Length: 232
Image (cartoon, rainbow, N blue to C red; front, side, top):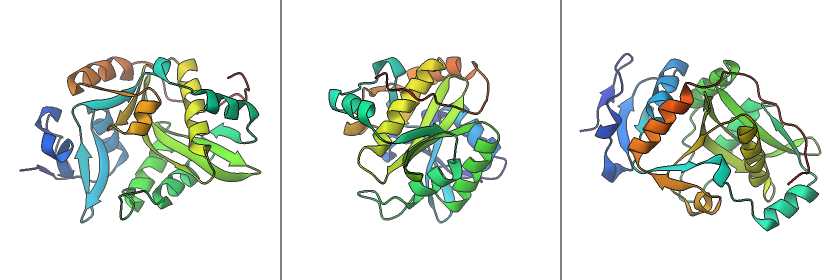
């Protein structure tokens, strides 16, 4: 049986996640900043709700991307050098998460980003834990992504595009920013062919948790900034 979490109940060990249910670990518990931070520090993330109750996951294996393994294709490199998009970081986090929530995705009937979840991540952004990267075209937000940064560990959450390749541009700049700040790993959560094409790979959950614990104790919270560059 999947545990149901009350307001003060701790998470069960990640080894109790249900393999046959994509790593589902627990249900319930309010999406408050402290609860979310505790989850990420344990290798757990929220993904969707059932009847208003949060679903918590810790899959095994875990999809990750080491920044040094990012594959920048020749075609994307050419696009980055010639792009007219403007990229920023932490300029409009609420707009990015709202756009991610509104984006229709293949195989999904609706969004897993509820109003309660948006409020919680916006608060985490205000506290310096959650970050966004934005892609702009003539002042209009056309793509972006958001996630969590704890120490030198980044947890990717969601991205969106309203123009071709806009989210790829944002992701490439995210990689550059993470490299500059000495981040050691990006949590991509679950396998997709797209992530694999960018250099991500699956590792055992035990290895993920071990590496994560080393990284989250490094670095401090701060607002992010990106320097404009054409050096790709």
